[in-house]
Amino acid sequence: MDEVTPQEARAALGDAKERAAQVRQTDTQFRVILLVLAGVDLTAALLIGLFPEGRSPLVGITLLVVFVGGLTVGVIVLLRARAYSRRGLVFFTWTCAGFTWWNAAVIGVSVTTGWWGPHQSATHFSASAIIAAIPLLVAAWLVGRWR
Image 1 (cartoon, rainbow, N blue to C red):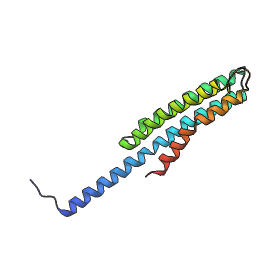
Image 2: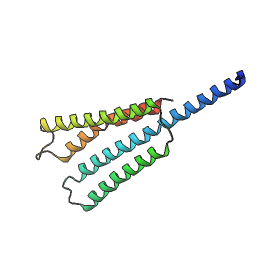
Image 3: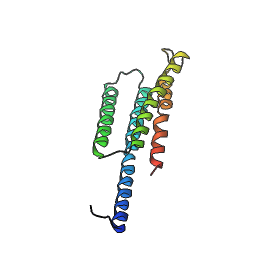
Image 4: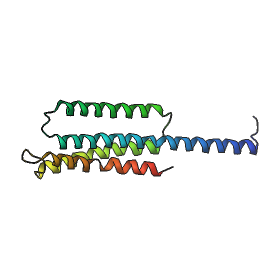
């Protein structure tokens, strides 16, 4: 078996560090996906708050375009990356799960307290949707901070 020279070992370690940095950089693509999800949520909140009756077909079409566009961008960003670190993938997964639970809690509290109801304005829905987006925005901020 061939012996590895100290220079070859240093070069291999340098290459491994460079590859690890590239994977961590790829993890920041989760930030883009989280911001897209938050953007979809906030856009829906804005549109429903501004047009609560839903009488405008343009609002429905706009919501559909926002949802499909957000899904498309998210899938494209996920497919572009070659590798993710375990830390990044676990963080992203837990963030999505946390958003789901937080969103369910916000909806539950909104309905139970009467914040949402037929007698309330659509801005109540918008406020709840904005509060529900908080975990996505915080997670996107955190992902952007690690390197």
